[in-house]
Length: 101
Ligand SMILES: [Zn+2]
Image (tube, rainbow, N blue to C red; front, side, top):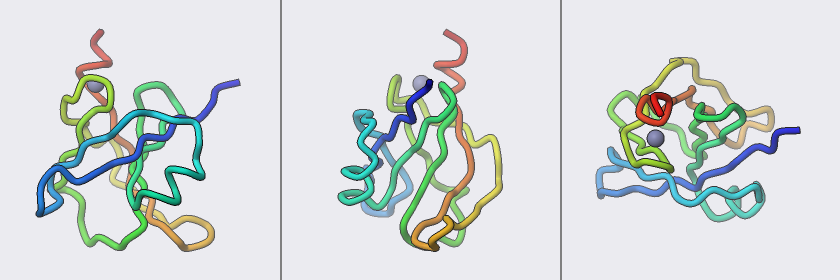
């Protein structure tokens, strides 16, 4: 069985256009309670960006890979809202640089 990995995501500048993923954990509750943003990795090297606030567009945001700090590439545009409506699920990202290793 594969465990889901969670990565808290923090802003790296005041505009919120550059974001860094931090150390991974399997503890969903801690990440969800302390961070408004996170990446979820259910398939190796594919990350879903989850955010508790509404954002109109996230095209301009660059999120850096938690492993190699390269900028993640967005691979799906689909956004959705979680079942209980408390957060936004902002599409999938992958790291081209880790994929080529
Ligand atoms: Zn990477």
